[in-house]
Image (tube, rainbow, N blue to C red; front, side, top):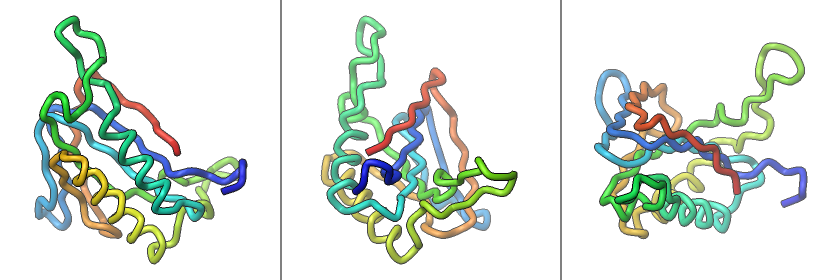
Length: 152
């Protein structure tokens, strides 16, 4: 990956609950934990997906006994909802209609998203997902609020 290539991008929110539905059907839902909107660029690899999964699972944004952000989602027995979102690569610097040129095409992005989900699950965290490529409705009860952007 060149120094100018866009890396995998996550928007992570600490949540009290989160759910995603497709055509009125709930396809993924969690209680206390993290909701991550996952953008995959055309430059991403399985190695990057593995690195980002590890970072997400170990991210210390839950309060400890002293109310300091010192605990990970595993430490608090939380869950993770992962939602694929190519629009995280929308670039509107030239005009008002975003370009998605840096987003991976579906045939590349879907296997990488699936590998990312698998790596999070292998880390021992319960995982729910949306439906790749679908028009999804996401409900997020942000806790804190705490929201971070992670890039590879």
